[in-house]
Image (tube, rainbow, N blue to C red):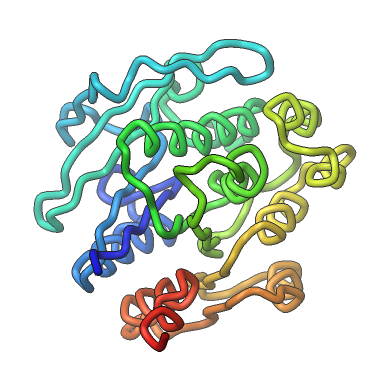
Length: 276
């Protein structure tokens, strides 16, 4: 049996962005799971604050050239890649000039969230799925970290549910590093509907596009949830407690990589396969 394939997607990965709970967790888990014998791919947005020269990013021409339609408008999809040599790991970047050129991540210089963060999340999540298809690489599980990845489980379980490339792909959402303040674009439900997401999946977003609603939407469409965040809010605790799926909660940092790797096997169904 070949190595299990794990697709890690995160809105931040160290060292391409400064150290934070999300960026360090995403980097360490991907590296650790790879060292535990799994085949991985890592994706993040190519935010304008990422220093392309310092990190030696370069465009992957054979993967670039696609266009994604967001809100009835074509947006070119560029794919870039860089290496973390000390980890023997490559990181792919989803890029688009309109969404990611600005020299910030999800808030401006005054800390105000960008009005198009919802569309940026849509573009990132769809861009990852389309790029993985073009790579011809079929993940056994997709491990999502950061609220900007929260729409991926929705796309996987709706728009891509009949795509043979993702027939057996599971998805895990990792609660790590908190959410966002305020609301995303109030028209996000209509934009997701335009993408082919059925009404019943997005009706909760019609009047409320808060972090609570986005998180609830993500967790309603996952096969497993992992909690690497040190302190969950009461809302997050309640959301996790209500889930019927596989859970991995509150693992001590010194055991995290081993526990997450084992949890990934469980969600994939590796234990069942091994016993049968």
